[in-house]
Image 1 (cartoon, helix red, strand yellow):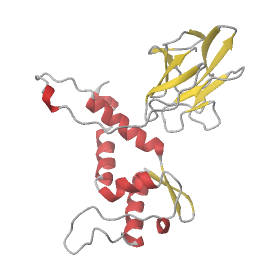
Image 2 (cartoon, helix red, strand yellow):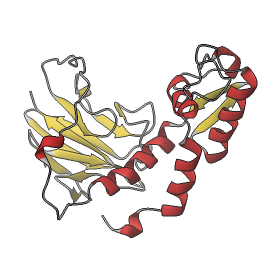
Image 3 (cartoon, one colour):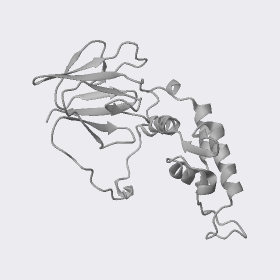
Image 4 (tube, helix red, strand yellow):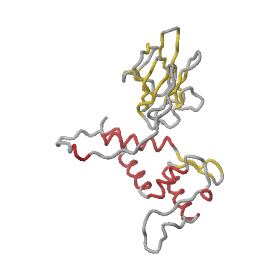
Length: 225
């Protein structure tokens, strides 16, 4: 990645809008379309005269929602209801990921390991599948059941719907099975073609277990069984 891959001014604009604990919590709560009057947020700041147990007023919540809407990370779905834009949030995370990929030239402090919160194990079923290994749905498996073909893209109607990824086309690729043979095919007209093992795919290409399929900024590992 190059510095040119990051719009630093836009990223600064986003980070300024997100630099408030209530707005970050609202992003989480608005993953389901809701009206500000339905949301309960308790202030996390210990400002003078502000009780941490008293919920924020509807007016304060609305002001925070409007600031999030102004930068595009929250969208109005109808009169009075809002929802977080997973696509915009993912784009912000991707820019930060590029920054986090900086290779240090200093000695690494191995004693400064950060604790990681525990996570529940994901359900894992037998059979062919694509497993997300790069993206916010890391670890999610998409079964390739039935006869196929299976479509991959951002539209929710796809077999593998990467709805959070604004870099994926509505339909970017298809996985096809013929007997024991598997292949991935690009979709004509897709703005961003798929990749297999990080190489662009402009014609049908065979798939083998362990191959990495790239769609948008998401990475999926193919498992044949």
